[in-house]
Every structure is written in structure tokens, then in C-alpha cells.
Image 1 (tube, rainbow over the protein chains, first blue to last red):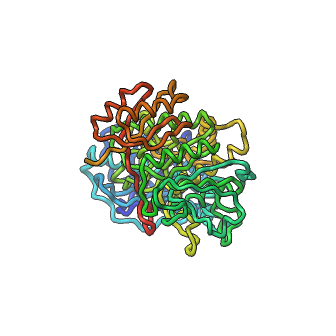
Image 2: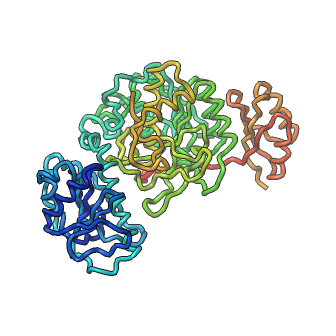
Image 3: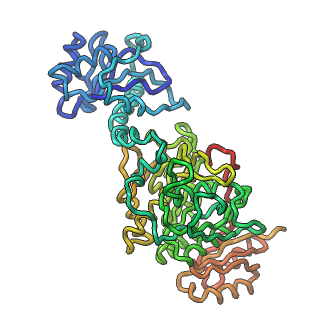
Length: 449
Length: 80
């Protein structure tokens, strides 16, 4: 049984939501009634909450009962209720849709193994009885969805999350993607990162095979920004960097650093397409592109990039690109940017350490290629930065993308026949499924072989 | 008027002959940038939007698109 503390900044009503096991509603309901000393009626459709007791929503397997969670929790430990009650959570006061800050409930989850039946925190004063209308039930439905999400989605990644918060040896991103357990190194695989260039003086890359090329007029491939060195770090950085934690994935791959963004952070299709051509000609199995331009809902993808990506795949090169950071969740979501919105370019969403979609991460809104394909770690990402800084922690779909690219190199090493579209299918087929919309996370969190 | 930068997609059945298509594009007024033979793209600049139509009509051209610019935030931004 899970007990979830109220994760929203809004108040609670003093009542409780109880989620029953699918075939345990009868026993669970009985236990709840004994615990609170009142009858819980089955919902008929025109609910107004009884003054005492509660209402059981049969189709949802959820009851809302007029007792605080710490009282209801007693039902969960009784003989009848044990195993029948999955979760107890305070009912929330739900407001009309506005940009309230969402706080993911997974912290509470992480503590559950030690204290599964800890008393709930004091709750706010109950709502006055009566006058509950369709509006109330709509709000109620949101609360139920939240409760079921909390048990499903968060439980799915809870184990990885609990293990992931210790970053003394490896970043959280390398832990949740199982890179730390993988024996592959990217050896023999060429990976191109098209970005702001690369700091070849960084000590963590001593002894590596590095090829650089600038597609920016008047600027050398040396990274005068930092973004490129950070992205290369996540995808291809060292197994044993000068300073722990480990942040790099394909640490024996060959680095192809193409500078298609200037030191000021700007670039254009002309340089990007030239960079793709360079990577394809050099037989890179993977191109990582943490760049793009915002798109509007309804906007079509570029035919030029789409055909280029297909031709690249046919020649053995998979292009992976950032979905873009134009969203401000929960209130504002924007579509996947250009060129990640091409059907043959993998679009990468960003997630945080708690298993939630990053607030800035774009959504698959436009059809026909505008979908998210896969998600990667993209919040609070530690990686390399040009000297003398050496390391930095930043967020973005730009950071999620090289995690997918680095892991693609591991699959490319493991299966020499998997190239182009086949390599992309390996990534999605092996992703960790999440109880989140595929519009937001595609096939789920990328996983190492 | 500033020239308009374009990317030109070469049709599948003309990629092998991309240099010939690039020459035809130049004859039609393209200021040739690069010929990307492996991916079948020609980059360059034209005088205006109407000239894009002229380029699109050249044999072996599958699509003409204006060049888009991309930007990333400055180095000190927390979200990049």
C-alpha cells in the first residue's frame, strides 16, 4: 500500500481517496467501513457527498471517504484490508486550470519502503458539505487520475530513482538509463556531435580519437560556448574522468565534433546540412544534434531534412535531435521543433530525476513526424565544460539528446548489422515504458543494451 | 535586396548526377554554395522568393526551402 502526501501546493479537504486492488474492492471497502465506523455508499451518478461515510466509484476502483488519511490507513493494516488497498491519499481542493506549480510525488514514494504506514500530515479544514456539482466531480476526476498516476507511473521508475540520487560515482542519467551496468563502450563506432564545437584541451579526453571540423565561417572548431563540450561529454565522455562522477556513455567511441553553431550560439541550415554530409561521408553511425528552431502547431516538417535523414539512414547514419525547450509546463506546451519534427529524425524529450517530463520539454503536437520518439535524462545534467571550468550542470532537451546518441553507439557496437532506421528501432524497442503520454515521452526512457 | 539563402533537395534519381544539376541551377541564377553529394543537397543563395520558383523548376530538383536559423541560449543559461 502506498501513502501519498499531498503533492500539490493546494490544500486538502480532510477526506481521503482510497485506491483498491482491482479484485479487492469488496474486502477493502469493508475494511474501510470498519476503520471509519460509517457506511460507504456505491456511487450512482448524481453524487452529493453524504455527511458521513463516503462514496465508492466502482468503475474506477476508488472511494472517497469522509475521514482523514491517517484514520483510513488503519484499514490497510487490518486483516481484511491488507492487500486490497493500494493507496490512501488526502483529497485535494482542486482549482480551475491555471499554472500552479506541479511538484512530483516521487519523494514520498522513495521513503515508502521504510515507513509504509506513517501517519499522514495534518490536513486542511474540510470543505463544507453540499453543493457538489459537475464541477466538483471534474476536479475529483483529476484527483483520481493523479492518484492512479502516482501509483502506476512513479512505481514504475521508483526503483531506478531511489538508486539514482547518489551521484558520487555516476550521474543520475547514466544510472536510470542503465549505462553503468552495460559492458559496451562504443569501441569502433564513430559518433558525430553537431554543435558549438569541442574543447580538445579538456583533460578528460586525453588519448581519444578526435576529429573536428568547423562549418562556421571565421571560427575554429574550438568550443567558445560550452554547449558542444557538454553534449559530447554526455554522449562520449570518459569512463574515469579526472573528477567523479562519471558522466560519459560511449567512452571508447571515436569523436567527430562538427561546429555548426557559432560561439555566440547561432547557426543555420546551411552549416547543419554540411555537417550532416561530413558525418555521413565519415561513416558515423550516429549524429547527435542538440539544436533546432521552434515550430508552430500545424507546421509541416522540412522536406530537405527528411530526405537527407532517409539518405543518411540508408548509408548507415542515424540522426537524433532535440525536441526543443519551448514549453512551460503545465500551462504551456509547444510542438517538437525543426528539424527533430522530421519523421526520419529521432526526436528526444527531456525527463528529470524523479521520472517527470521536464517542464520545458516539447510535446508531439503536430502529426506526421512531429512526434516525440524517445526520452532521455535532461534536467540537472552534469557533464564536461571547456577549461578552466571543466564541469557544469545544466538542463535541456539538448542534454537528453546526447544520452540517446551515446546509447545508440552502444547498440551499434553490440549489433554490427543495426544501422540507420534499424538502430533507431533498437532504441525505441528497448526503452523503459512509462505511465506517461507518448506525446510527451515517446517509447519511454532510453535504456542501454 | 539581400540574397535569400536556400537549401535545394536533389531528386533521388538525380543524386548521382548532382554536379550536373548544380551547374543547371547556377545557369538559372543560383549563387552556388556547397554541393553535398552524399545526402543530395545543394546550398546557395538566390535573389528573391520568386527565384526559388525558378530553382524548383530545374530538372532534378525535388524541393527548395529558405534557410532557417537556429539559436541556443547563452552559456550561462540554466536551460539549454
